[in-house]
Image 1: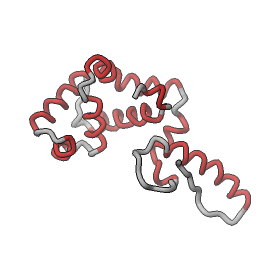
Image 2: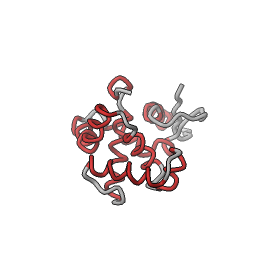
Image 3: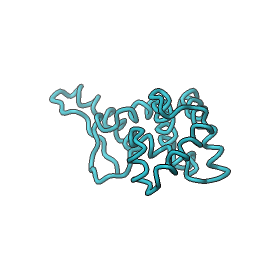
Length: 151
């Protein structure tokens, strides 16, 4: 169960707006990693909140598919964990040492996987804008209903 919470209000007009905000927060929170948190606020969903609003736009979906196309196609053919490697790398802020620990891999293995991802996607993962675009694309992918994600 996911519960969205809007800011406190003392006016009925604000409370009515708060209901819409709460529904939006709850919807966006569905794409958050599982946690023990009972309720979510706007500050919890952040970029995911924006993506929840715009995700049905075909241009947004096209952006995500374009950014990740090579890796998604590779994943469909090989299922070799490169997509999960990218997901964790992005989630760890591009920290390769932490990625190696989190995935229980040697650093040379991590560097080799990241180099493969760079070749497949045609990007440099050391570039902050590339990581940001890929992060947004992953969030868009994750915001889609489970059946559409193919997970």
